[in-house]
Length: 238
Image: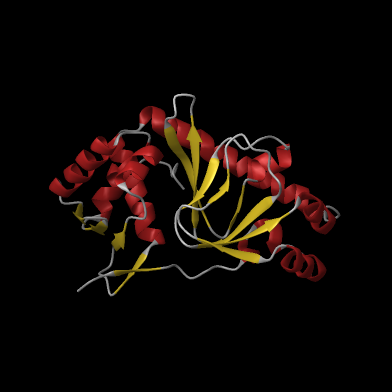
């Protein structure tokens, strides 16, 4: 039986803390001034080194943040899944984007210009508190990620990624623990800080140990307990 990817239920934008505490008038103006737009895989929302023209609100879908060095080498530094903010660090710092934002799958995204953002949320004292909390959490995740890249094996990073994908992705008619990898081997390698060849070897090793079964981009977790024992102690790739 052919398995098809079942998209997660679209969570309301109110689950984003910044919007969760918006009062009725703020919410009305936000919906009015930031209409939804649909994007397809490969669409670029912004480019590295460009100045931000506003703030993106991802309603559904995923966007990868790609950093390119002077030699043209590209690295996926983070994947943002809706509902969430996107480009907020550059927006609030009023600095150029450090990465390029490229849509990975069909997505619905709202865009709010700076003067509209501050006119809607600037008078709400909860806004600064929520933004400070968000930046603190992101800093903690970044520290965990750097620690993981430095000390965790590729095997541990891959196990962590597979467990996260298993939680986030459902397959219509699939057995428990079965899911489709959203990333290609090259994308996985960039996220995990390794090479596509190492990704293939690691998946093969996990299969040989009886922890997972892989067919193309379809994965089934066979032994979740042992896979968790192989994963990183923290959750750096969230």
